Amino acid sequence: MKYSKSRPQSTQLTLVISMASLAFIIALFFQLFVSVRSWGNEIKSQMKIYVYLSDSLQTADLASTITYFKSRPYLGGKELKPDLEFKSKAAIASEFLTSSQEDYKSLLGEENPFKNCLILGIKDEFKNEASFKKIVSEIQARPEVYEVTYPNTFLGSLLGKIQAVGYVGLVLISLLTLFIYLQLANSIRLHIHGNRVLIKTMQLLGSTNGFIQKPYLLNAVLVGFLGGFIGFVLADGAFYYFSTSIPEIKSVFFDQSNQVQLVLVCVGFCTLFSLVASFFSLSKYLKIQHTNLF
Image (tube, rainbow, N blue to C red):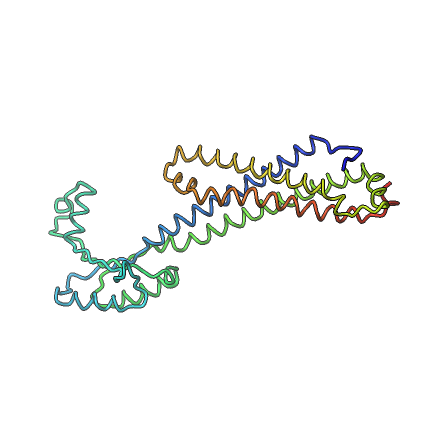
């Protein structure tokens, strides 16, 4: 079906650019959350509780202390074994000497100021600030414990920062989606108005709304696909540029499964959004009586 007036190319270009902008922002926040999830899982797996034991603890009592911690419900597992590691103060002193290249004896004037340490791996369901505080309070109450440390600052701030970034992304995507919807609706309204006589004549001759809508919907699919793909390419180019400066993110951003998911999210969302928005706009304006179109 050919209409008497074609849609201006400038309008089409504007819609494609808008779709590309939406796809770019979606890709940006998609990769952000993928990175946060990947790094968060890695950091989370390394979140442990360090229990420093008192020097008064005898070697004979060490086994009973280890047995106690192995029986605790919060202790995680690693390769079918309890995730618990004992590190002697001699080993800690050796690591300190290797990393700092300084002799603690000349600095502190003591034989060995470090403490024997138990490193406890915690189950995922206990890796939150409230659970950590409860576990630490329980451990600190034991007489053989000298000190307990855990990443309390990280636990308290990570979730809040992720939520804040998520809210900002959601607001940006929502505003841009609304703006593009208004663009699409206005473009369709103007085009229908320009072809009002032809469209109403076709309706009077028995043409269904589906037949009239078909070229508009095909055009909407094309606009959404092109915009989504262009946005994906631009976002991937930006990620590649940043990955040259930060090589660690390259393995996350350019993983094969990540790239497939990203192109599906960008192209799929923009195409579906363009199609659905055009359909609702068409359904609205095609219901207008012919006397109201002039």
